Amino acid sequence: MLAVISLIVMLNVGVDLGELLPLIENVVCPADSANVTACIIEAVETIKEPLITGDYGDGVKGIVLDPYVINKLEVNRGPSFKASLKNVLITGVRNFQIEKLRTDLRKKKFSVAVTFPDLVVRGQYKLEMNIVLLKLTGNGPFNLTGMSKS
Image (tube, rainbow, N blue to C red; front, side, top):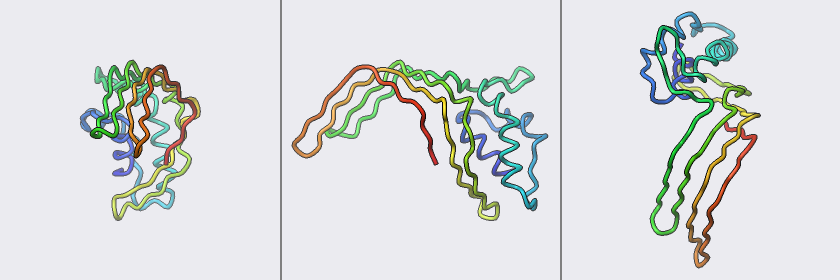
């Protein structure tokens, strides 16, 4: 159960855990089960659509993850690195696939490898970066596709 809750929170940051309980109350994975990993993956698949759409039922709304919009994001790491992203549109999150999941319920830890085969991230960027004596700058549109993360 803890691993399922942790994975849900990871996928839907910023939502009160109490709002998610109606979604997960019927997808409990017994910790002593021999197939707890398979059960967790199946549970995530069961609640995937409400997590993506942000519609948890009974009028409870969460963050819509597909499409997801970031109006502005700035990263400033001092004089050597500044980046700004604007009008970022992220689509294709709904088709994520859990490739590998390792659980250690005794230590309350898990490791997950997720693939986003249809992920597209588009927006505008501005970059100022210094590497030793080399100054790099750039701006314009960006387009990222087909990413995986473990």
